[in-house]
Image 1 (spheres, rainbow, N blue to C red):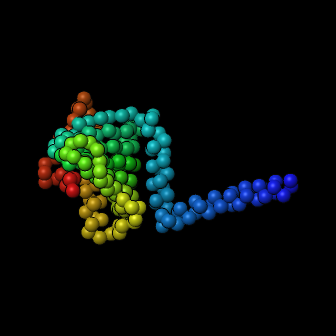
Image 2 (spheres, rainbow, N blue to C red):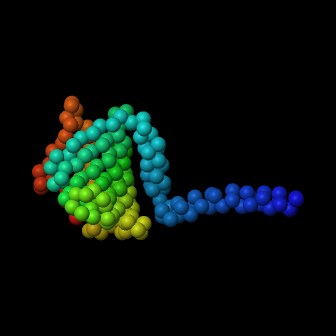
Amino acid sequence: MRTDRGAGRWRIAAVAAALPCAFFIRGVAAGGDPRIARIRAWYSATEKALSTNRIVRRDLAEFSPEGGVLTAYFAGDSLAKMDVNLYFENGRATYDLYLHDDSAYFVSHVLGKYSLSMDGRIIHRVQYRMYFDHDTLIRWIDTTGKDLPANGQAADDEAAQDLTMTRILVACAKREGMAESCLAPSRDTTPQLEK
């Protein structure tokens, strides 16, 4: 009987000793970058507080051929998160933008293709996750979870598109008054959304 009890204690001790190692390995997988740890902490705090946030919704006119919707979450006067859905004939683009001081620190960008035109059922999905530090891309992850180079022309183009979109949408979300929609800026300043 004592052997079983001793074995159980040993198992508990082994699991307790392994937990810090698991968290350390997760940190190493993220490159051990303290900025990534900070972003993950902000992300968790934002998600946890969403139910207490003030919500603002806006129609996004001319942002995409089939329209779009912005849902902004405010913690007091601070904009914490924006969810954006843009609709196209053959699919939709979804952005989840997490903000600190009106600057994006995490962006999830999902492109979905419909099975049939406008039926709403997604058959193909591509997701990019981007981590930013003071408007500088520090990590870029593709659909498979693979890290993509955070430097280079492709990364610069994606980051510029997401940061431009963020600035436009922050201004839209913060509009005073009873505005129910926002118009897209002129074609010259609107980022290319449909791929």
